[in-house]
Amino acid sequence: MIEKAIYALLTNDDTIQGHIGTRIFPWPIPQGAIEPSVCYMVDEKPIQYCDNGNGIIYNEVAIAVLCESLLTAETIGAEIKRVLNFYKGTAGGVVVHHIRLMNGENDFDEEARMHFVKQVYQMTILTN
Image (cartoon, rainbow, N blue to C red; front, side):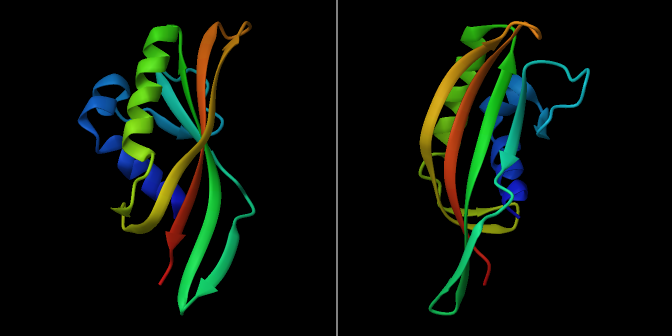
Protein backbone atom coordinates (compact mmCIF):
# COMPACT_ATOMS: atom_id res chain seq x y z
CA MET A 1 0.00 0.00 0.00
CA ILE A 2 2.69 2.48 0.97
CA GLU A 3 4.51 1.85 -2.30
CA LYS A 4 1.37 2.77 -4.27
CA ALA A 5 1.06 6.08 -2.42
CA ILE A 6 4.74 6.99 -2.92
CA TYR A 7 4.62 6.12 -6.61
CA ALA A 8 1.39 8.09 -7.14
CA LEU A 9 2.66 11.18 -5.34
CA LEU A 10 5.94 11.28 -7.24
CA THR A 11 4.60 10.46 -10.70
CA ASN A 12 1.67 12.88 -10.42
CA ASP A 13 3.90 15.89 -9.79
CA ASP A 14 4.73 17.72 -13.03
CA THR A 15 8.09 19.05 -11.84
CA ILE A 16 9.35 15.65 -10.68
CA GLN A 17 7.96 13.98 -13.79
CA GLY A 18 9.83 16.54 -15.90
CA HIS A 19 13.09 15.37 -14.32
CA ILE A 20 12.60 11.60 -14.10
CA GLY A 21 9.40 10.71 -15.94
CA THR A 22 8.22 7.44 -14.41
CA ARG A 23 11.72 6.16 -13.54
CA ILE A 24 10.72 5.36 -9.96
CA PHE A 25 11.66 1.86 -8.87
CA PRO A 26 11.63 -0.32 -5.77
CA TRP A 27 15.17 -0.97 -4.51
CA PRO A 28 17.34 -2.07 -6.24
CA ILE A 29 17.13 -0.02 -9.41
CA PRO A 30 17.08 -2.31 -12.46
CA GLN A 31 20.44 -2.67 -14.15
CA GLY A 32 20.71 -0.34 -17.12
CA ALA A 33 18.05 2.08 -15.86
CA ILE A 34 18.42 5.56 -17.32
CA GLU A 35 19.52 8.26 -14.92
CA PRO A 36 18.36 10.30 -13.20
CA SER A 37 16.25 7.73 -11.41
CA VAL A 38 14.56 7.39 -8.06
CA CYS A 39 14.31 4.28 -5.94
CA TYR A 40 12.49 3.58 -2.71
CA MET A 41 12.74 0.96 -0.01
CA VAL A 42 9.96 0.35 2.50
CA ASP A 43 10.72 -1.14 5.91
CA GLU A 44 9.66 -4.79 5.72
CA LYS A 45 8.30 -4.86 9.29
CA PRO A 46 5.89 -1.96 9.72
CA ILE A 47 4.24 -1.20 13.03
CA GLN A 48 0.52 -1.92 12.82
CA TYR A 49 -2.08 -1.00 15.40
CA CYS A 50 -5.71 -0.02 15.82
CA ASP A 51 -6.98 3.35 17.07
CA ASN A 52 -10.73 3.87 17.59
CA GLY A 53 -11.48 1.17 15.03
CA ASN A 54 -9.06 2.55 12.43
CA GLY A 55 -6.26 0.33 11.23
CA ILE A 56 -2.98 2.27 11.21
CA ILE A 57 0.31 1.27 9.61
CA TYR A 58 3.42 3.19 10.61
CA ASN A 59 6.47 2.67 8.42
CA GLU A 60 9.77 4.15 7.32
CA VAL A 61 10.48 4.73 3.65
CA ALA A 62 13.94 5.46 2.23
CA ILE A 63 14.01 7.30 -1.09
CA ALA A 64 17.16 7.83 -3.13
CA VAL A 65 17.81 9.95 -6.21
CA LEU A 66 20.63 8.60 -8.38
CA CYS A 67 22.27 10.88 -10.90
CA GLU A 68 25.65 11.66 -12.47
CA SER A 69 25.19 15.34 -11.56
CA LEU A 70 25.12 16.31 -7.88
CA LEU A 71 23.22 19.50 -8.66
CA THR A 72 20.51 17.60 -10.54
CA ALA A 73 20.26 14.98 -7.78
CA GLU A 74 19.90 17.73 -5.15
CA THR A 75 17.29 19.55 -7.26
CA ILE A 76 15.19 16.40 -7.65
CA GLY A 77 15.66 15.61 -3.95
CA ALA A 78 14.35 19.06 -3.03
CA GLU A 79 11.29 18.52 -5.24
CA ILE A 80 10.61 15.12 -3.65
CA LYS A 81 10.83 16.74 -0.21
CA ARG A 82 8.39 19.47 -1.34
CA VAL A 83 5.87 16.83 -2.45
CA LEU A 84 6.21 14.33 0.40
CA ASN A 85 7.10 16.24 3.56
CA PHE A 86 3.98 16.94 5.67
CA TYR A 87 1.70 15.36 3.05
CA LYS A 88 -1.73 14.32 4.27
CA GLY A 89 -4.45 13.05 1.94
CA THR A 90 -5.22 10.22 -0.46
CA ALA A 91 -2.67 9.08 -3.03
CA GLY A 92 -2.96 6.05 -5.28
CA GLY A 93 -6.11 5.02 -3.41
CA VAL A 94 -4.21 4.97 -0.09
CA VAL A 95 -5.28 7.21 2.80
CA VAL A 96 -2.12 8.84 4.08
CA HIS A 97 -2.38 10.19 7.63
CA HIS A 98 1.01 11.89 7.42
CA ILE A 99 4.49 11.81 5.90
CA ARG A 100 7.44 13.47 7.64
CA LEU A 101 11.09 13.74 6.65
CA MET A 102 13.32 12.21 9.33
CA ASN A 103 16.76 12.73 7.77
CA GLY A 104 18.64 13.07 4.54
CA GLU A 105 22.17 12.76 3.22
CA ASN A 106 24.21 13.01 0.05
CA ASP A 107 26.75 10.42 -1.06
CA PHE A 108 28.80 9.42 -4.09
CA ASP A 109 29.29 5.86 -5.35
CA GLU A 110 32.78 5.68 -6.87
CA GLU A 111 32.17 2.40 -8.68
CA ALA A 112 28.88 3.47 -10.29
CA ARG A 113 30.06 7.11 -10.67
CA MET A 114 26.67 8.25 -9.36
CA HIS A 115 25.58 10.80 -6.79
CA PHE A 116 22.94 9.73 -4.28
CA VAL A 117 20.56 12.00 -2.44
CA LYS A 118 18.90 9.83 0.20
CA GLN A 119 15.89 10.82 2.30
CA VAL A 120 14.18 8.80 5.02
CA TYR A 121 10.53 9.48 5.80
CA GLN A 122 8.09 8.36 8.49
CA MET A 123 4.81 7.46 6.88
CA THR A 124 1.51 6.59 8.53
CA ILE A 125 -1.45 5.27 6.54
CA LEU A 126 -4.99 4.40 7.52
CA THR A 127 -6.39 1.04 6.46
CA ASN A 128 -10.08 1.47 7.41
